[in-house]
Length: 121
Image (cartoon, helix red, strand yellow):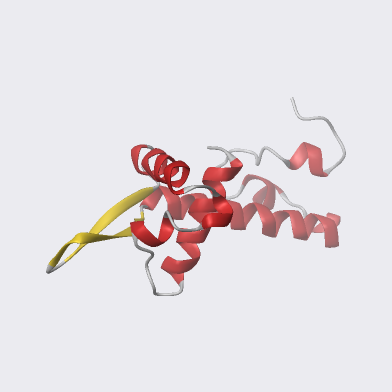
């Protein structure tokens, strides 16, 4: 997923979490993120890869809203966890424990070596 896909997904997620799901029409109208044709392709990519789902509006077959899937919600949770860990490491490096590095998945967070000044392998 590119930075452009992420920017579109973030805009949709902000609307979703504020309780006002974004319609497909509104999403392809976000002109600062690209042309309508480009945004339509990005929406198709995000749907195909399981980040978005379309939600039909009862009584209006033309209007569809964009909803976050479990995959996209996990994407934002992991991003939030990584940002929180990064902030913790920058403010109190001694607070770093195996639990903060490994988290609940027992897999090391990939940016740890970069954060500590080492090289990522």
